[in-house]
Image 1: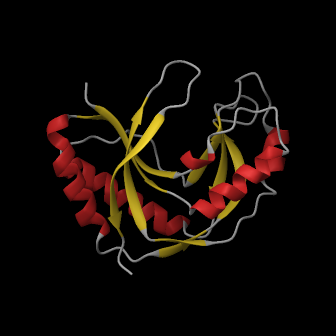
Image 2 (image 1 turned 120 degrees about the vertical axis):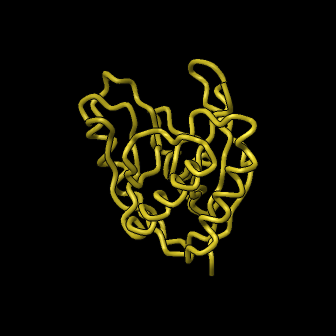
Length: 183
């Protein structure tokens, strides 16, 4: 089995720090580590070692002609449903179309490099928690909807290795490469 990776856009450090401050007064949920907040453009569950270099090249080529764009967090929700949440998320409103196009480009790039992305449809969001399935998420969604950071400019895409650390532990993320967008 190969490496577990994903292609993502990260909000700037200031927004991730603002989210960490927002969470300080909201205990009771196992929140994602702020440094790991990102929008996953493509999840690549099995990247063979031989495909790593072609994947990096293909993603870089796919991103090069894409103009940087403005992105903004707005709204919140739960997958698959607030009554039985597996994931709590913050939504993306500004920049959602651009993120969708970018997701299609990097998924195609992965396929060209011989790496199969997962088959899930792309929904622009940032995963912020993985609550117990028995918990109704409605209250937390209302709380998350009050988080309104400033807009930011997406200028690069990251290829990230995700190493599982065992049950109950967050995966360890390591950026393998960064592909700039056109300015």
